Amino acid sequence: MLKTVLACVTLFVMSAQASAQPQVDLQLSQQVDADCQGLNLSTANKVEPGQCIRYELRISNRGTSAAQSIDLNLPVPTNTVIASSLASASGEALSTQLQQSNGKPALQARVERLEAQQSLVLQYRVKVL
Image (tube, rainbow, N blue to C red; front, side, top):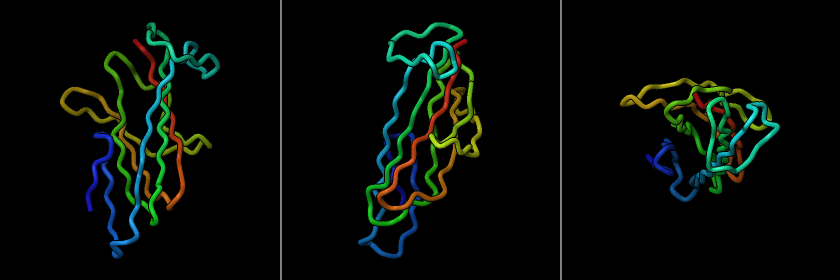
């Protein structure tokens, strides 16, 4: 089964049971990180060159079975560079790559498995040029 979630994540799920299905929810938030160290976060609407934007993606599986092969295509705004790689809040690094698509950069990653009723928080930073 193929599901598109929030237009930036595609979830591929192979399931033998129609009644047991994953239900993946995503929440993407951002904060301005003035010193690019994570010590001075704010919800300001304006960011200056040299400052960073910290993104946090919460992935929750509210379904009754594990979600498998969750492919992520995360935003990287123009006039920015990646300042930190994608990692879980517990510090686990994920394999990622920067992919150019139609001239727009995107950070791509895959979550291999997310158990039912579990959540995962991923973070990354971009620096404004």
